[in-house]
Image 1: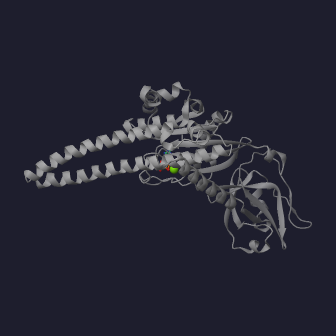
Image 2: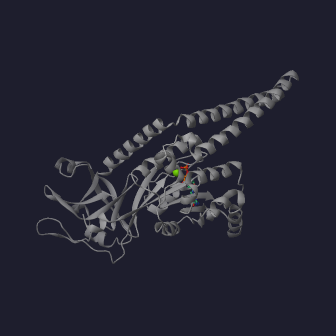
Image 3: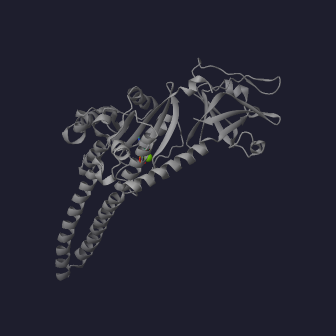
Length: 411
Ligand SMILES: Nc1nc2c(ncn2[C@@H]2O[C@H](COP(=O)(O)OP(=O)(O)OP(=O)(O)O)[C@@H](O)[C@H]2O)c(=O)[nH]1
Ligand SMILES: [Mg+2]
């Protein structure tokens, strides 16, 4: 491997926020990994913490997608559990975050109790030191007028919402929906000194159970308040319901019965979340981290597969005219490049893209004995496949049988 690859710095940035704020959209636009799953409907989309890597400005950038709080399927306690597990397991591997981009829709008119709660939770998760590496970032500027946006941005920075985080060092930023705008945010974070979050210190260094951590205590308190609120509402609803039954008011009676059932479900859900948090004792957290490590190993195993593109399938003309663009050809997914039978696999369509500037080094590849594959395939060429970024590494030309292949490996 060339020295530049060995010394390449990895910059890890987590993207967080409540559901639907555009975390996956941000990662898709900025990384160029076009198949990052973005939700198309109202329900929540990202179910697990997942890193996406790509090269930028001489560094390996890893953007970590996270499930959002206030998810339509997963409870807040389960989202917190999954984020904390990932954070703790990566801390143990010496992987610290250079920054966190916390997204918030500028279109949100109200900063209601629950959004305030999530901001506080985020604050507890980070702690004062890591907050200095946080960008509180608004999204969806295309859906508001400049005036509306600026006025709301001002409100957000007020006391109850982002005020406390800003005092502790978090900065405010905007994501305008484009790659360029996203890269500007990365530029701001790339030079940061990576710092551990409070949750990483508490879980991985101090071996605390979830209920003992700052964020765990905070969430528990919030769930206590919810339980109180729903219990009181249930009592009131019961009285009203009984009254409606007595008065033989069938319509109102039906509505109240439904409302009671719904409130009871919410009360049970709050109790279930409290139980979940309480059960996250040290040994259980370790088991979850082990499971996360296994998932990571499995991802790495899959990532060892490469995409081989036969030089015969590359039109030199198409390649030379494709600077800054892309062209379609076919490739094969190969798990073991020494196994020649793998090269007989059915090919699938791939798009060779180029992010070169004309100054990038051009590697000349030998096609067969005397022929020169002069299309200038280089590390600026890449393929996006299965939510991954596959880069053409220099000197990755191999011959199998009578054919020559250019190899693209997972970045
Ligand atoms: N116009 C516009 N739409 C956006 C922007 N960001 C996100 N969206 C849209 O908002 C919806 C939700 O975006 P996602 O990226 O899936 O949101 P998320 O934060 O990842 O949501 P979860 O995975 O559920 O936590 C999608 O339909 C996106 O296309 C933006 O900056 N501008
Ligand atoms: Mg998402």
